[in-house]
Image 1 (spheres, rainbow, N blue to C red):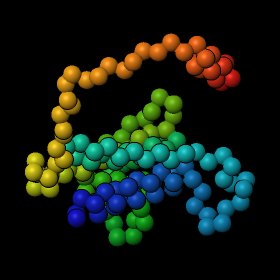
Image 2 (cartoon, rainbow, N blue to C red; image 1 turned 180 degrees about the vertical axis):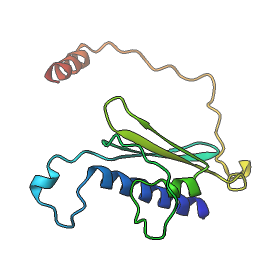
Image 3 (cartoon, rainbow, N blue to C red; image 1 turned 30 degrees about the horizontal axis):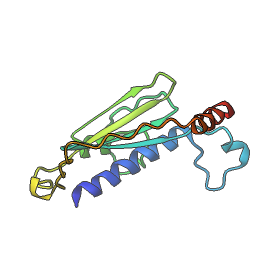
Length: 148
């Protein structure tokens, strides 16, 4: 399916760019090179019509679009986002770093109402949970909270 291939490509490109921006690219790095590395966070959000891919890294340098070249080697240039995504953008975060995101459109023919799971109605009236007064339970909960 084209959507899966596009999503894999976009995730790969965004994570590669984030690692290049904030990481160590040596095959066998020394401990002194990696003990301070920042996290790279990836988030996928699905809606009825789109898949959003977001990648956060600690580098505040925003990507710029350049002309595509055959030897560009990836890193920093969102050419794949421009070519693959319906929309993309980037923003700096409050705590430092940036998020680069792309939106992949889900083709309308992919999801048809007949293929979606059917919800089963909840029988009414629902049975209300029974209230209990268990002092022992309350003491155990309080003791657990005090230990936090």
